[in-house]
Length: 140
Image (cartoon, rainbow, N blue to C red; front, side, top):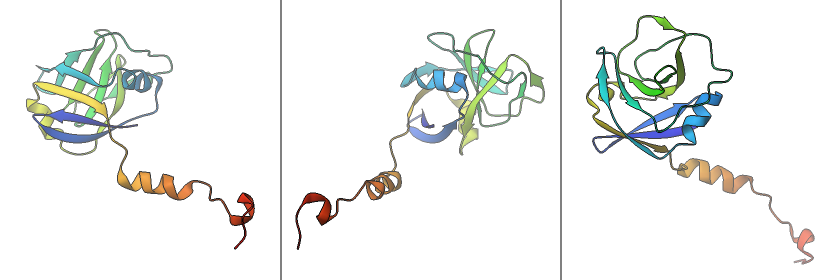
């Protein structure tokens, strides 16, 4: 799923993976969170509720640009630096498609579903079934 992070008025395109945890996070959107720094690698914020973790990978190493869920604390983590170690309590939700450096100073982040792109809308329009004259009972 494509989402956008809005940081200091700038939109940052991001992509969630197809895990149950990422889908549960998407169900919370739109969401505005107050972020704080954690160990100079990521920005964290409490979520309004815990996320489903069924089927989540056993261990993950977060890299710069990763969006992750830290299971014991039930919080969102936005990584602006590589974590450098694998963590069994971390579930990667997705990745920022560009601009991970903006995460380092993010104080307030709004996360929302990305609007459908014009290209995608055009493809949807082109793939709709066409009615032929014979199908409608009219002939020219």
